[in-house]
Amino acid sequence: MSLSGATLRLLLVSSHEGCRDTLEEALASKIPGAFQLFWVSLPDVAEKRARELLPHIIFVDDDLSGASPSAIVRRLRQHVPNAACVVVVKEHNTAEAQRAVLEGARAFLVKPVNADDLMAAIQLILEQPTEQESSSSPSPLFAKGKALVFTAPKGGTGRTTLTVNTAISMHRIIDQTAAVVDADFYAPSVDIALNLHSDRTILDLLPRLSHLDENIVMSVMTPHASGVHALLSPPPQHHPQPIPLPQVQETIMGLKRVYPWNFIDLGINIDETTLAFLDSADAIIVNMLPELAALRNARLLLDLFYSRGYPKEKIFVVLNRWDMEGGIPAEDIEKRLHIKISFRIPDDQPLATYALNRGVPVCMSHPNSALAKSYRDFVRFLLKHCQLPPELKAVVEQEEEKRSLRERILTRFRRNEG
Ligand SMILES: Nc1ncnc2c1ncn2[C@@H]1O[C@H](COP(=O)(O)OP(=O)(O)O)[C@@H](O)[C@H]1O
Ligand SMILES: [Mg+2]
Image (cartoon, protein in one colour):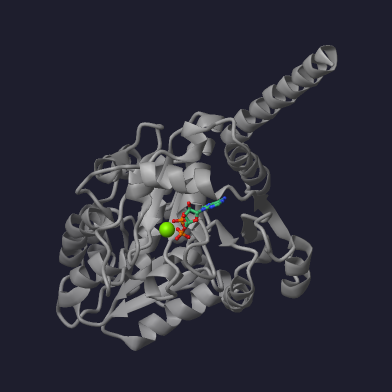
């Protein structure tokens, strides 16, 4: 089963609460904490809920106060083709099970549903995508990429600068297209940092999530001269429409199927949408400045992450402008926050601001600067600390080899010069 860190979203269409309880108990005994089970009791609203919740699997009970389960399966297959349907039938109702399978159900379960049979069906669905699924998207859940969410305890810490420079440096180091997502809906600035002009935004993706495939993902991305692709935010809004968790999860899954690395520039307001991005992250980068206010807010933010059960290994604190004049020493920050600072980025206000205002990231305009070098080192840090799919591991090892060779040559060169 390949869940890639995501939660399995399941929808049950049934007029009976007992059916929901049986499924809930069976799932809780087998995959506690790894699923969300939603329930609709009225068959008429099944399609609407399915489009909102974007379930991976939909269970359709055969006892639906007269409604035909196979007809519901047919409609669900049309409206949410990426969801797998499973009918749940009474012991002798194999005729209905067959009809549903002909309409596109992937499996059927016999009542009372047994936990082992349920898990066997789920496993089968996750491991074996249908022909249609494998041609459009490899599997409803299979996604190889990583989603790195960049957040901060307060505004103006250099989050966008770090996100775009890391993404471009990653793209250059591993030679594979990286994605940058502007998820700061209150104060978007990826478009400014990259000097991009496009009407395509994440809002164009949301209505198409139930049919999501690689072509749809690509159609909403804006390519940048560096080679990275950006998923832009709509213009700044005071009260952006929240994007619910299933839609955020599905957006990230769609991106992860296309891009090995996805860099998400998150807004600092903690709301339903930001929490959905944080919940779906493979790694969270907390970008902070060596200032007192940042320290206090960082403590709150980290406590929030721990209370939500995010593993400590998933959280990386990056101290931006660590050497700025008058800043709190990194060691003091570590002591006060009881954390280890994962990485430090040097201070270079003139260069960073110049780059941001020109819309040309430092790693492109001044690749030999200390700042650009530090972004490259941060990429190497990420490659080492974020679990990598095997095919990327080889690329990283090659890159490491080239780098150490380059360094050996340079050291020898300097020695000869001296
Ligand atoms: N390493 C750095 N050294 C000095 N200034 C920086 C650095 N990184 C970012 N900045 C500056 O900090 C300010 C805020 O950067 P920005 O990336 O827009 O932050 P945020 O997205 O957190 O609001 C900008 O003026 C930017 O030039
Ligand atoms: Mg920003």
